[in-house]
Structure formats: C-alpha cells, structure tokens
Image 1 (cartoon, rainbow, N blue to C red):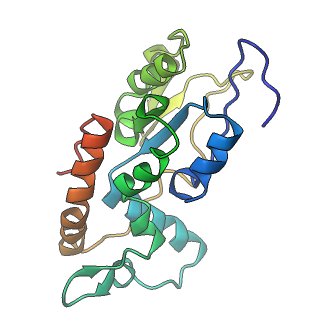
Image 2: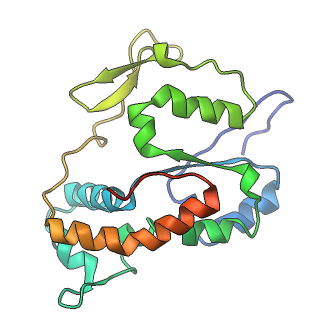
Length: 204
C-alpha cells in the first residue's frame, strides 16, 4: 500500500478479498484500523453473472444447470463451484468478524448502487467520514448499458460508464433451477441480514 499522509484516505480494491480465507488475518496484521467496504448483490443473480462472464471467455463450458447441481435428481447444490460458493455471504463474513468489528465493515447493495447510486454512495461517504460531495446531480442513467454513469469523470470532460464487460445479457436459466437456488440461499441470506442489521430484499 502507498504511504498515506494525514487527512488522506488510501483505497484499494479487488473482488477476491472477501472470499479469500487468509485475507482478514493479513489485512488485520497490516492495519487493524482498516475500514472495509463490500459490494454485495442477490447471490442467485451474482452466480448467473459469474457464469456469463466465464462463458464469454470459454464458450464451451458446461451448462449453468449442470455446474449448479451435484445431483440433479435430488437437487443437491454443488457448493464447491466458486460461482455458488461466493454468494454464501454469511460464511465469509463470519471469517472476517474474527479480525474486524462490524463497525469497520460497510456492505453496499449492488442493486441500490444501480437504482440509487447517490444514496448508496452517501452511505459510503458517511462511513469514511467524508463530506457528502457526490449527489444525484453527478449521475445519469444509460439506457443502453442499463447502469447509471458518472456525468463527468475526475480530470476529464467526458462521462464515465462501466466497461464492456459489465451489463452483459444473461443466458436464459430454467426457472426451476433459479427457484432451487433461491431456496438454497434463503437461510444464508437471513443469517447475513441478521449479522449486518440490513435487509437486502433478495427473496423475490
């Protein structure tokens, strides 16, 4: 990490910290005062999105359905598949709480980041002890991407939208498979809501 001066905040991001078993101990050893921000979204949609990304790189991978189940007849979910494993948020959070108190962790809703980016970023600014500078006026909704974009990126006169890899069309998944996944994640989601004190509304 770069050296940080008084009054500065250094941020670093990666999608894998939250689910990497060794990460909490290592980050805690570096600095126990670190504040952690985790963006989460409906684990079923997340798993399908994960699969869609892999499919774009490896078009010959097995179907989503065949990777989801250990046994299709019994409906047993294969929790060793990373696309499924990542969405068991309560299990990952449990690991982090051995090293960091809940007050140092902020969970951002991926859904609200799309529907109300300024509101969700307001929570981030409050959590970091920053003045609320980013507001609604900084965003516009891009119909093509289906995502909000920044009207003007820092140091640029052009708007900034998420890259080509974001907003891909998901393949059609059998509704029975989606329902089975919803049933599978429900108890983990409920535990996660209790742990975080926030209801994310992933039950629909």
